[in-house]
Image (tube, rainbow, N blue to C red):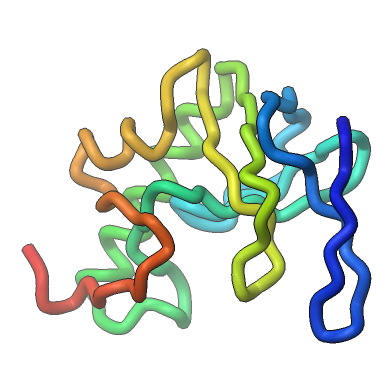
Length: 136
């Protein structure tokens, strides 16, 4: 994999270059519906879906409904990745939490689209996220 050196707030970070798929594995953890920890080139790496936003889980959830929906999205992703091939397409960018932004596919199918089609996420393009508690 080719890496891109980024300097953020005086800290050097290596970020996967955009443009090519990186087969990931193993998937270490599904943190929530849109954030994962996996091995990229042997390094534990946090990856955030670049194209979908799922409700929060745990203490980050703003209401009971969001927690329930977030847990459903997380469980759905865990089910999908247990038996299928995961590929990661880094954008070459990091989010504000220094996670690698990427499109993720499972057996060639876009995970963000799969989450949206199943009512577990909404499309996301980097804009300010809307809350989940007043929806549905």
